[in-house]
Each structure stands twice: as C-alpha cells, then as structure tokens.
Length: 114
Image (cartoon, rainbow, N blue to C red; front, top):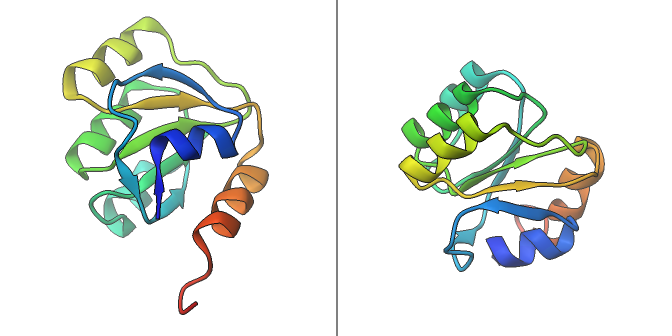
C-alpha cells in the first residue's frame, strides 16, 4: 500500500493539483484509452496516462479513481487542472515514461500473491 505522497516520491513527480496526499493507492493502471479505464478499473485505482485532455479527468471522476499521473513530462493546461480541482482528483506529472513509472510502482506495491 502506498500513499499519493509516496507515489510522487517514487516517480519524482510534481503535484499539479490536490491537497490530500494521504490518499491510499493499492492498485495502479496505465492506459491511454479511457474506454479501457472505464471497463477495467476499480475504485481507488491510480491512473497513469499520456493522454492529455479533460476526458482523462472526467473518466477518473466517474470511475472513482484516486488520482492521475501524466507521464513523459506532460503538463495539463489550466482547463484540465480546473476540472480536476472541481471534482477533487489529484494530478501529478512525471518525466518518466509509462513503462518506467509503472515498473517503479509495481516494485513498490509488490506483485499480487506476495
């Protein structure tokens, strides 16, 4: 189990919005197709994505995700961040690519069955 604060440290990520970094993260998903997120996510999951639009935040809100991490140094514009603040979805940005970011979190969370 990790907190968003620990996720930020592991990924050398910058917090772009959100004030509760004590939110617990026990599952992580990585996707650029929001239809996959809606079909396969579980409430509380953290989403890593390279997709840069407001639909990411809307999807995170509807799916009750714990937050969104944009990979590859992508930084959402103010419209996206305003929506994230409105629906209280924490947003982080990391310069890591998706593979490296997911690998670090997988190592920290441990594999299923451990």
